[in-house]
Amino acid sequence: MPRGLFISFEGVEGCGKTTQADALVDWLKGKDIPVVYIRDPGGTDIGEAVRTILLDPEFRTMHAKCEVLLFLASRSQLTYEKIIPALSKRQIVVTDRYADSTLVYQAYARDLPGRLIAVFNRFATAGLKPDLTFLVDIDIARGRARGVFDDRMERESLLYHERVREGYLRLARKAKKRIKVLDGEKEVRSLNQEVIAHVKTIMARKGYTL
Ligand code: TMP
Figure 1: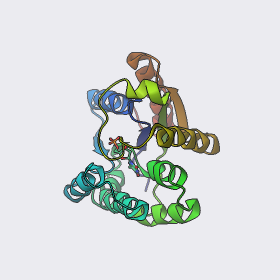
Figure 2: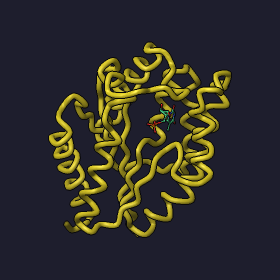
Figure 3: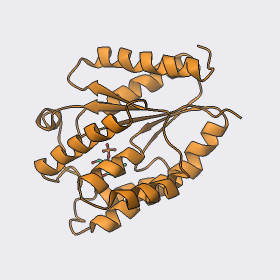
Figure 4: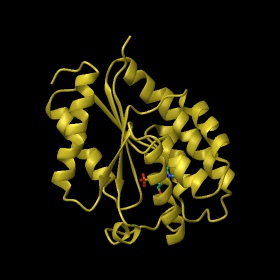
């Protein structure tokens, strides 16, 4: 049976991915298309509790291995409680971050073994991958200038966040078909039009009628 469409948004802090995800969800709702909108980490009661631990700046001593396992714990709950049931009802799932974040923030930027993390990710997600991923790319300093960033991850050094950006761009080069790189410095509305154009194309391919 064909499943629903799974779309993720990725990017560094302040890139504008959440604004774009919000706008896509509004557009889908405006077309009366059933959509489930979630965030990772979080998106379930358990996941939100794990998120609070992960982002608490008091937990400065959190080990990189503990961190990655907590992100995966939240994601597995999200996948089994929300994503798989929605996709099996042919709903569209839009998520603010998913497994790519772990490959970049933990494996690439923290130098954890990439192959092992990819296996853990597959375990946590039942091998589920987004059909389409938007990577909103922006210069780290420009992204940071857009707000106050002081949770545990955001307090990491500029160098760390530069590695994250680099990791995302590498990943996008490897998965060109799935990951669409958007220029986060463009105007919100023009980015929104790009997002919708890509979503319309994939919806048509998957047999959705608009
Ligand atoms: P958010 O603020 O964009 O919702 O993301 C929460 C933070 O967690 C953000 O700094 C990115 C980070 N993160 C990881 O380090 N690994 C992950 O797997 C995910 C999903 C997020």
